[in-house]
Amino acid sequence: FGSSLELFASACRPHLLSVDRMENEMRPLVEEEDSELVESMLESQEERTQHQGTRWSGRARFAVLATTVAAVYLLVGATVVFFTGSHKVTDVDAAGVSVLDEVKPCKPWCSKEKHSDKPWSQKCGWENCHGCSQCAELPEVPPLARTPYELMPCTGSVNTTVDLTEGDYDAIVDSIKDALNNLDPVCTVDACPQADVSGCILRMAGHDFMDFNAETKLGGSDGCTDMKEGDNAGLDVCLVAGTEHGFELYSFYQKFCTKVSLADFIVIAAEAIMSFTRGIYLKEFPDRAAMDFRSSFKYGRTTAMECDYSSHRLPHPEKCNDVTKVFVDNLGLKWPEAAALMGVHTLGRASIENSGYDGWWSDPENSRRFNNNYFITMMANGWMPERAVGGNPLKNQWERSNRAFDPASQGKQMMLDTDLCLVFSTGNFRMDGLSAKDHDCCAWAMPFHLVSSDIDVINVHNGGEYCDRDDKTVVDFWKTLPIGEDVFNRQLHWDEWELTSGARSGGTFRRMRRECCRGCDRYIEGDCAGFNDCGSVSHPTGHAFQAVKAFSLDEDFFVAQFMTAWRIATSRGHRGLRRMTRT
Image (cartoon, rainbow, N blue to C red; front, top):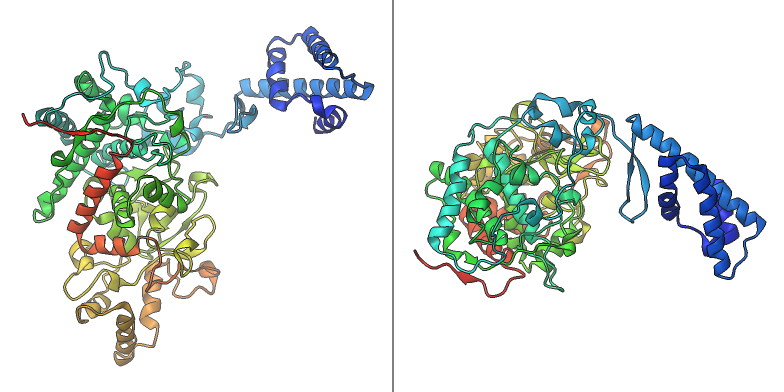
């Protein structure tokens, strides 16, 4: 077939049928197996060529015939294989060209007990479960809705909220909080219902506003995102399917859709989620700052029924520069605000069946509490690359690499490139970036970033552990240093302390690296060979390192920055938003 194409192209390049067009014209032949149509198509092609004033040479005719026969043979073979369950025919690829895709074999985890609450009608939509025998028995399902507006239709719904009182806002928030409160509050390494639902709703709200285009002014929190885009996979689970622990946002929207636009409703729903999960945390730490969304909420967002402009505008999890493009350039946030907004990753987790990534950002219990644990987790642990997550070479992430960390008992924890590049880079400059796919390094930071004479994050908020070790000798040393000591002087104190305490120079440093980086005190042999630190552990050079450090040390500061960032992000693209009237 390839030789025929080359012959065809060389003889009649100006009039060459595109491969996708030929395949589309040949598809009926595969279905009807009518040889007369082959001759008809060739005659039609010759007539079109003669009409254009160009005569075909004998060699060209032969090329057309050879290519056509090869295409028929290829398509017939592919169709036969398709119906036997080994392959499928995909209409078009990203470039609009018809292609043949291999159906991936059924992955063992598709049938695991932890997915038993999800019906096969849902699991068969996951790429790695297409090939399961259970999927062949399912009836054909209607195509996925393109937008949330199509996914959540409501009779008499308004596109723009005309009037909203504080009582209306409270009614929406309370109904969602009640539903969350009825979910099982127990978190295990495999499941945490309140965290799973919270993460899904916040993901919907975030994907809604992250498509804002600063040049065209399109997008933003308009209740619209491309539901067929891969980055939005799994959102329907908590929106309409009801398979995310029985929670379905659609049922709540139906109660308010005649007064509140879907665009406003999604923002309010996200605020209800954050208020509820913040409340869980405040029960244990009542002196921490509350999150008052109601006093600053403004209504009047118009729901977009279509949003082709939304496609391919979400930040790519493995492109650090996308954080700059989406959060700073388009949404207009400052770096501390951008980092604060990323703090929503404290809630929920990533799953292979949705995003293709796998693990919790925080530990399971903290994943249902809105706090600053995301930042502490990033700073108080080591992270090393995990490539081809779930067997997919296009999905790469960072896994918690502490030597004493046990994913089986503590829950798998991960970070994406876009998370860690807030703090780390591979060199001494911010533009060096960080990539789990390309960089063999361990991302970790010295403990003095989290401990000082007046603030002790490690003991107060991290169980006294640094890289999963209770190393009080190291932690207590940093607490003895005078307030205001800069990093350079702290390092001098460290070197002096190591010598006077009888430790071999550099021994304590290597001990910390060994605990944070899978036992690699030096990167010279075995599994450690070829690795290095991801930039400086004393002076990390990520864009938002200082902000992440500040958020780890001062949670109230994080909350203040987040509230500002949330207000800006959810308002972009809208004019004339109004404050609610009192009831």
